[in-house]
Amino acid sequence: SRHSVDIVLAGGGDGTISAAAARLMGRKKALAILPAGTMNLFARGLGIPLTLDAAIKSFADGEVIAVDLATANGQPFVHQFSIGMHAK
Image 1: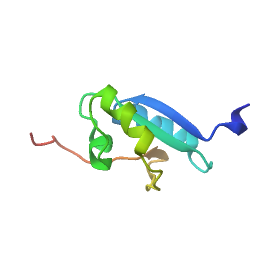
Image 2: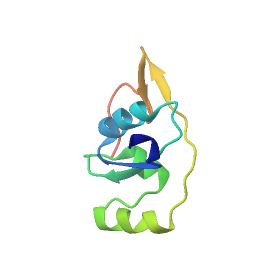
Image 3: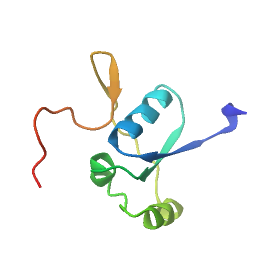
Image 4: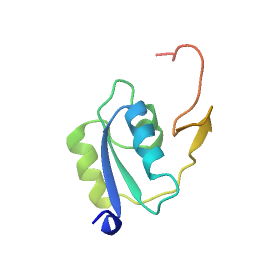
C-alpha cells in the first residue's frame, strides 16, 4: 500500500522534481532524485552526482535531509524562482 512507502524515487529535471516534491508535500516521505533533466540545478545544489549510475550508487550511502518547499502563485517548487537566463 502507499502508506508503507518511505521513499519515492523521481527521475527528471527541476520541473519534474518540483512536481514530485509537490505531491509529497506535507507527507512524511523522502524523495530520492535521479537527475535526468537539462540543467538539474536542484540536484546539483544538493550535491547529487549527475550521472544516473553515480546517483543510484550514492543512494546507498546517502542521508535524508529536509529541504524547503516554496510556493509561487500556489505552485510548489523546490528550486529557485528566477527571471532571466542562467549563466554558464
